[in-house]
Length: 115
Image: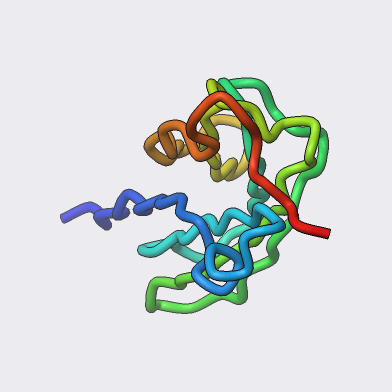
């Protein structure tokens, strides 16, 4: 029969060391079940791409790949109503989106940074 290609799983989360640190905001995009190919990862705030693209060149393999990419949220986006996603783009036609983070910066203020 025809070869079956699996769909990658794309998850977005706060990185644990960053969460414990408290005065930065780093997201991780964890991607599993990737077949070998050239791809790039982008992060979005409220559905709008940040300009930075993280290019990945995976070696040819019969096994699936897993990878994690990190992204520091600019302080200008530390807003209560902002939500974040990450997207994997493969070739010109394939892309997979994570679920939304939901709001990361609760309450009426941004993250509090003590000096």
